[in-house]
Length: 408
Image (cartoon, rainbow, N blue to C red; front, side):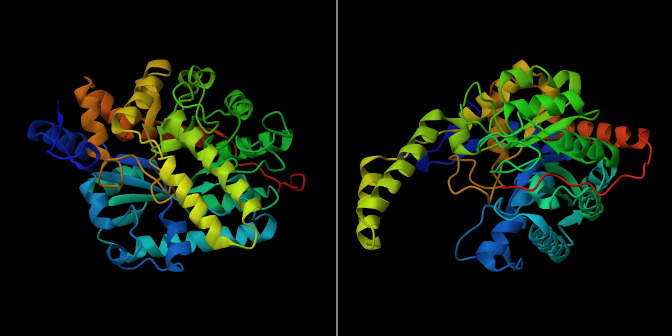
């Protein structure tokens, strides 16, 4: 095996990548930038550091991301998530999003020897060739453009948003969320106009977080490749945030890319079910221990001890990667870890220095250098270049501001 475990307990042991495989991985990521589709460091900085981005290595509550580990992991390009809670809507959502852009901008400015803004595929390639990490932004939810304001969408693109996730955890006035009750049977007529404007300005349509019906609606409409910035395969993990085979089968016709995520509950149904059971137990204890938080905490701790959380593995992540490659093709799979946006991790995919462990697992399964190059970043770059070409081919119309039905 390429990944050999050191002596000791299985989960406490660090995989060792042999020298030949390590050199092969280094060569691949030197030639093709390793692009991660989703990292939540900006919102982690806001919530856990009050927006401060300096001295990432010294946090008393360690993050998944810092500059040293990005370099150790071979990262060549990072899409930083511009996330705000789905409960924040309207003009407040626009303001909150601008604040997140500011945190991201200051993060990049604070590490000029490591990070540099990229707004095009050519920028990514140039920055990677210079030895730095190309940094882009992704808007994580259509609620962030206020009440469907296309002018805001265009300005977010100017600020550096390469993609926009159409929704997050709540259904909006124009698109259904995978984790909320549907209202539009996918995407509304106004939502279609948002997608058309995204095509026109060269902003990638991100379908992570939307329903299967919305995925199909987007594939029916978009002239440019779509992406899933952080989702996995529903055939292997039943979570509604994952991508069903009916959608994977259509990706070759669109050119889109599923960037496989490392969220444990998306990877393994046993972990997803455990989380649902724990949520149900916590709700039950809320009723039993009203006014007694200490009693509730003790009872929940006892439940946790009696019901240990299942664990998954790098191998399981590779299973999702391979399923997508089999159904959609090797041209349609990428990586979107969701680091610093998750509370639990896959052992040995615990932070941004661990990507080589996944690549080594795939090498052990027989993946070629060409296939790995497509996975790490080639597919994303192709999709982005295609979106830029579509935008260049579309007329610069007098687009309206746009307005969607008010969200509930």
